[in-house]
Structure formats: structure tokens, C-alpha cells
Length: 212
Image 1 (cartoon, one colour):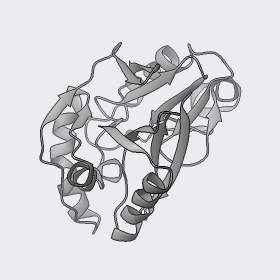
Image 2 (cartoon, helix red, strand yellow; image 1 turned 90 degrees about the vertical axis):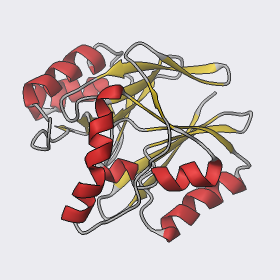
Image 3 (tube, helix red, strand yellow; image 1 turned 120 degrees about the vertical axis):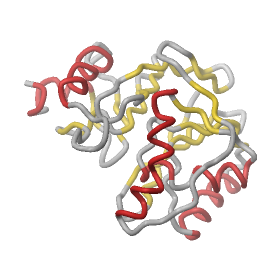
Image 4 (cartoon, helix red, strand yellow; image 1 turned 90 degrees about the horizontal axis):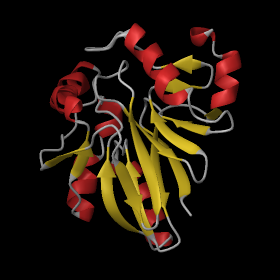
């Protein structure tokens, strides 16, 4: 069974996810820990729960989702997994950090690429990868069919959607991604978003004003 732990980090209020199982293995998704205090918060949780991080993943590479990549890499000796279309976004992230007054050390280690249809394994459990561009060109969603949840990044929010005014964003592409990659999931599927509270697919089909 996969357990989902969320931390909300940085002034941008980004949701960082730790997925872990009963064998004490963990995947860190979108570490947005910006300050040393936030880094220690994440580290303490992993230590207290006796978890061994085995994989580092970004749903996409906007600055608030990659703040902690380098720290996780150096602390736990993990290399980064992303969609290949996000490599350019990762390279641009420090420029965005300077622009917003939030400089940081970017990840510069080896990259491993994930594709639509791939499977990420956490012990016996698995996550199906769905490519959902629009907010960012290589946004990935991670769907656990067995437990009925998806880690969705900044694709779909509670009664909202990801912004598309950032570089390489496109609103029509994003809406198409949501309809084809997320709205095809069962209505009871929980969506863990990159910001804000969780939601469910069925709720968004009825109540999301951007998708009526």
C-alpha cells in the first residue's frame, strides 16, 4: 500500500509529496523545500518514519517544484527523473528564481527520462505515467489505479487549472490534456495537486468553471 504525505513549502505554497510503502521505501516528488528549516522538516519526517528515499521525481520543472532537487540529490544520493520536454524548463528555473527574488542552487546531476505510459514502481505498488502538457511542456501525472489517486502536479486544481501564461504554456493544450488524461479516470479518483487542497475527478467534471 502507498501512503501519501504532503508538505506545503516556500512562499509559493507548493505541495511536496512523499509516497511511501510498508517496506519503508519512499519516492520524493517535487521537493519544494526552499529554506534550511523546510529541508529539515522533510528530513525529520523521513528519519522519524525510518524511510529510505529511493527515487526523486519532478512532475514538471517550474522553480517552486525544483527548489529542493539539489538538496535531495546531495542528501540522499538520488538522481532526478523528469519528462524530456522538461529539461529546458529545469535549465530556466534559476532565471525565474532570480526574477522572483528567490535564488537557489539548481540540480545539475544526471537526468533520467520518463515517458507517457511508463510505470514507476514502489515495491509491489505501481504508478502509471500520463503526459499532460499545457501548463508546462512535459507535465507528468502519476496515477495509482489500485488506490484511486493521481499525483497531478499543476495540471488540475480544486475548481481551477494550471496557469498557461508562463513560457511554453498553452491553454488549449492544457484543457485537452485534462479531458483526455484525467477526466478519463474514475470519478472517485483523488487528485493531489501541486498547490492547494486535494479534489476528485467527478467533482471537477461538474464544478470546474474552466472545463464546462
